[in-house]
Length: 513
Image (cartoon, rainbow, N blue to C red):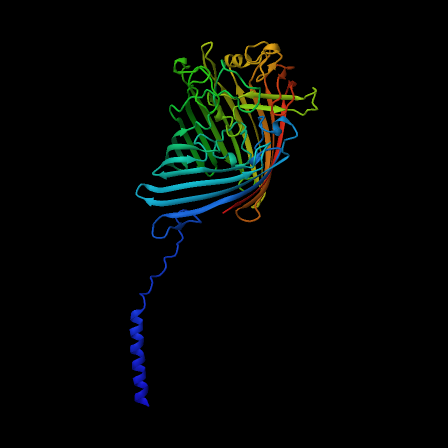
């Protein structure tokens, strides 16, 4: 029995060895994703590389009251909000989804970084249009050795703390805000102790406002963006120089820029089309000389010991021939127009409005480009009640100032009997009339607002924001605007030109990840 058992065991071992030889080789251990702690939380090594990646983003659900997405107020006649008609939206919803991808790799010349933000959104339709949807690249740039190239979410000229105390973007009360982003090629040098300097070449064409030729027709006052746009092509990029300081006491941002106002020809054309071969325009039409516009901006942040991460923000901007440095050009366009309540002092109410151009000229009289001056300032304070609740208050003013020559060109379109915008039998169906001689298209906006939000758990904010603005155009007292045709649902009537107040609110829920 003993010999039998030993023989059986030996045979079984031999058979097992033969079968094991036929099995595949054991797989190598799986290379699990490893945490990368070099650049903060959320980064992981891409398997098989020394590159770290972080994938994140946010979902934003917002309801605006008498405003548009993100609390934007409507200052132009693009829907019922500015006209005060029954097609206005008392509330407006917008849903946004952001996906952020951040990669970083250590090299001998510093960190090689790529960063992108892709945004998709869907919003309430306005008027007769369908639901407003969009997919955009908010940012997509490469950084290496101090250089940045690609699309950034703001210009290096812009105040970096504008969103620190408010959400609503339109009308920065004197601070620029190019939240729609732009292409830049920049170099930033770190001097140490929180001090850095940047020199940036930027493509501003999709945000730059047009240059108006007084020899062309002019659309109704304040009716969205005028139909005439004689903006020329890109000639040289906007040049921006900025100095930034970030220290324990707060921060400082100083910036300046120069840009070229280049008109295609001494003739008009519809916005978005070529100016060649339109209305008798050709290369023989000539063109006014280019004019360089510029702006300067200063912002200071002062940390205060009054609460959790409290801070005071003060800043201002001055520009000449570069209105987007002060009046944000992301939705506001090139014209403001706000109508009062139909039950106002006149039968058909009141209104105010103006045009916003970087330069005004007149090719028919040989008047060269007149640079438009714009300036303003803001003050804001944010207080942290505790780790969960924060409240801010903010306010300021913006001013648009045309010189006498530019005002004369604009007012010539609205004087009684004027060839292009006159009254009586000569009145055009596309233009109106101002009934006094005290015509002045200078414009002033003052405003204030407050924001409170609650962070009950990490990366979740729930809050509200309210804003008020007052709009004033510098026409003489008693000026009446005669609107000659029905546009934007407003009746053909006389409207008293007087100050208008705009109120708006926002409820927002934002989840970051």
